[in-house]
Length: 178
Image 1 (spheres, helix red, strand yellow):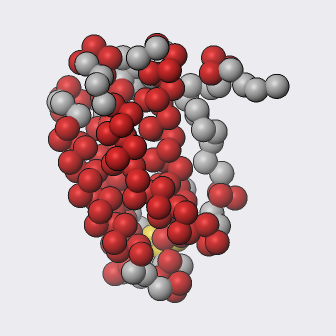
Image 2 (cartoon, rainbow, N blue to C red):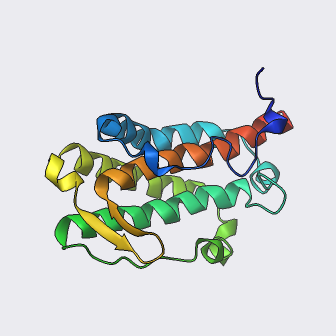
């Protein structure tokens, strides 16, 4: 029996991230998924008007516009985290209040600015990741909220994150017949 779109939890349209997803053997797949976000996100928002972009993906959730801006915020932070992990010994990163960032005045900007950020960040980090040694993928940073993360774990998480938020947009379009 297939699950209808209405039965899927709109908070997690592709399911929760599970640390068991961290799999060195899937590294190339995760890097590829990460590299594809800008194009897949562009396709997901293509043709949406301001009213549609300002529609929450779920009751009490972010708008589709905020979701795009969140991806830029998050992935910029992720890029910096990986750079720290590769250049320092187990640095502690600074978490950020993503819900508060999503409410700042730039939340109303057109999505194109965040799309450009994502294109640049993803191009740079994809190139970096494809050039790392196995040992470099084992380098870590420490998130005070969730503990140590290897670069391998980061890429598994951010591949999931890319798919997760793109699915917020595509499932909203599907539910609304856009």
